[in-house]
Image (cartoon, rainbow, N blue to C red; front, side, top):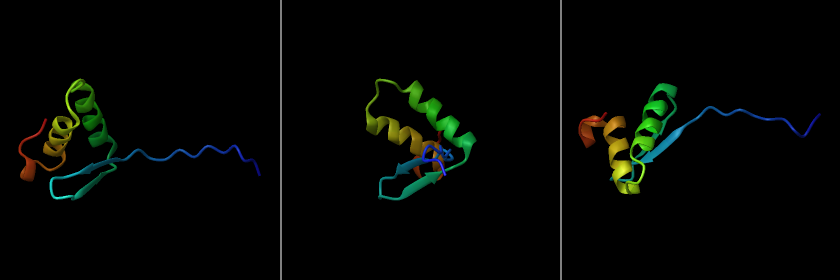
Length: 66
């Protein structure tokens, strides 16, 4: 058995909301949207980016996203 096996994990995205709720995103399409949003917000604060991402994953609570 070789020690050099590479395991490909599925990508996931984790976000923490205002009340410490955790959002576990494993849908590749949603992850692509979130990654694009992060890239588009280059230079913004982590808080601003986090709030923008939360509007995407939970628009009912955090407002309209995308």
